[in-house]
Amino acid sequence: AETREDAVMLGRALADQFFLFEHVTRDHEFKDEHLFYRFIDEKERGKVSHNQATGKTFQWADFISPPETTLTEGQLPAFPQPDFDAISKKDVHVACQMSPLDEHNRTLLDNVHPPNWEDPESSKGDGTPPIYDLVVIGAGTGGLVSAAGSAGVGAKVALIEDNLMGGDCLNVGCVPSKALIHSANLAHKLRGDMDHLADAGISIAGGADAVSVDFGKVMERIRRIRAEISHHDSAQRFTKLGVEVYFGRGRFASERTVEVNGKVLHFRKAVIATGGYPSLINMKGLKELHSMANNSKGTETATPPAILTNETVFNLTKQPTRMVVIGAGVIGMEIAQAMQRLGTSVTV
Image 1 (cartoon, rainbow, N blue to C red):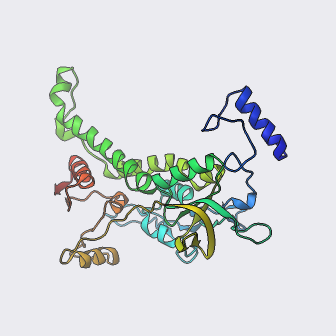
Image 2 (tube, rainbow, N blue to C red):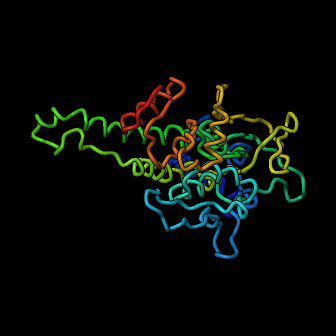
Image 3 (cartoon, one colour):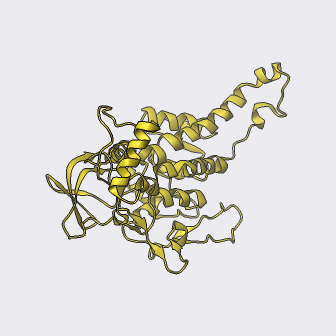
């Protein structure tokens, strides 16, 4: 449709004659009114900046240095490293927390926190600020559903995310944890089902001891699965759904305004869906060990222990021989059981 009138006629035909959709209230015809549908100007859509050097939009691969290829005996394969000097300041924290920056994690980041993202235009053609029907702070499960559902009935929606779209579930919760549990369960089932297999006429040379775990491949599979489904929670997809996506830290400036990246957004309603983050517990020496593990490569005689949270545990590429899990809640027990079944000695 090229005009609003044509769009109304098309909408009525699709609703009344072809029954492709109906209004949620089901009590009136398709109309050109607020919260029925709206035309979206291209300036209202955020986008990834154009890379003049490559002629394409920026990708995280543009900011990643190739790994060292010369390895000494006993070293693990190196992974690409970010060029922090070239990365936008508002994106640096994302590169710091995501590891390793292999092809899978780069694909994930391109979807859920694309580099050099250009925010939508937050003012009308005459310079006056628009009023959003809804501003959503936080692009996790709750924020994404709120934003998509509201935009789907014609609301003007702004979605603000400082970190990764998809939130805990995609990035550090449901998806990676269940992928880890799946591998752990397979290993456990094979080792524990030797009698059942023998009864069915199937044997494994060497018995249960012959079942080995390639931990690097286990974790690589987790990163691959997460990357493959990340487009569902991507900035590009939600932009196409009519949501105006902002990457930055939002803060309320008044009862009806929120500020992000120096822009003031006016709104009628707001949803706060910021979720939570893990923090170090008040245990003597823990903060010092955490600092040592993150700022030192160890000595010739000792390597500082890795102090991980439920978020950073999925950055592992080498299987720890021993692990202590502090906290026997759902997350702690999931990680503890999975790591034990994969061959790590675990204490809860």
